[in-house]
Image (cartoon, rainbow, N blue to C red; front, side, top):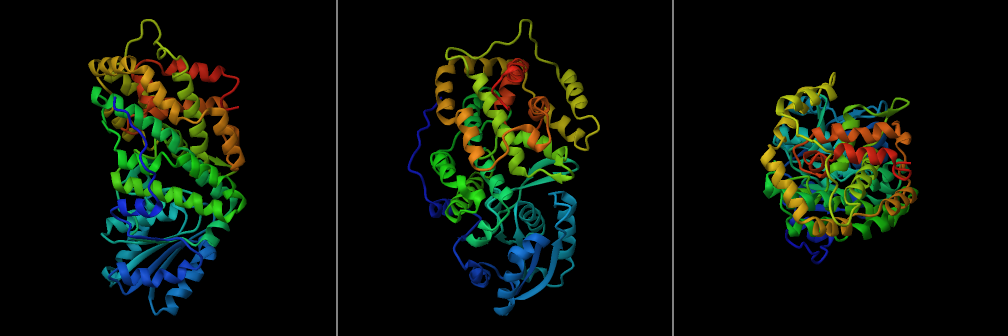
Length: 461
């Protein structure tokens, strides 16, 4: 296992240069006035098509339209989603946006312009990509890393997945708008940023076990690692007051989230910024987790997923000498038995068939599982040292999340503690992207860890 040492921490401008899709990010007071120049500089178009929701229209859309019309740029249409019920990133919205854009007689000369938070951006990103168009993004909250990311998180037939699509060619983020967003959106962004801690730990694991037979071998790429990991804790500390509307903190949070998106552009993968913690969130998004009919934000689900994954990591690496041992007589399930298990876990879900397919694709054979087991045991002390150096201790993470206004208990997002813990089983069945959940399942350790987690007086309480 290689020794991955942090190199120089690249600046926001350097990370932007490393991205190969986004060309410019404006983040300064009055930057909306620069949107006409962005359109002239990067887009071969004579007009725009605006996509927002009622809230983001009031936050930024009206002002952007006035600036565009004042500059003589044609607004060739508009979609304004209702403020309630809260917009979901369902694929049928992508279809609706495509139909509206495709009906334009001059689509090739029209720029889709997304004005909103993560959901609006993801929908416009995917629709634009399917139409072969580049788009421009006006973010209205520091709530997600998806603004600058390669790919869009979309629910397709009930299955949450990252669909490939290009990032915006340019963005204009007005600090005053970001700071004026509802506090829950900024705390959601903070939770999403904190999740990158677990993503880094999972990447360290995958770097070791991938060559031993894991379905997806993703070695750490140093330049991308240095974009996302060495400066993460500093950005988190600077971003804590963001939910209180602190302008400097909101800007720091947005910059950090933008950088994580640029890392995805550079790698064409979400590996640098999304790990086992996001799998918890994906399950809950597929379950349409809501409080009194209001969907829980992505970042708040990720927050609880990050706490759960942190607890899981601490339990896995609790012994300084060796990893846990599987129960006596443990045997790995056959593919047919595994199919039955996964089918039962997702019975009645629209995503049933896709999850079963994914779970079987990621199922390693006994020989590969033995190689992975041996590699982990041979390198355990070094692996443990690397992971714990990256992992923020549970108590410290919880304190930081609390100061940032994030939920700290599963009950706050509508789950019992036992439900949140049990989610690990279904989360492991999803996504062919190796993480600690996969490793512990492959080695027969998952049930033991979950039992200890359930009995713990500390975690998720």
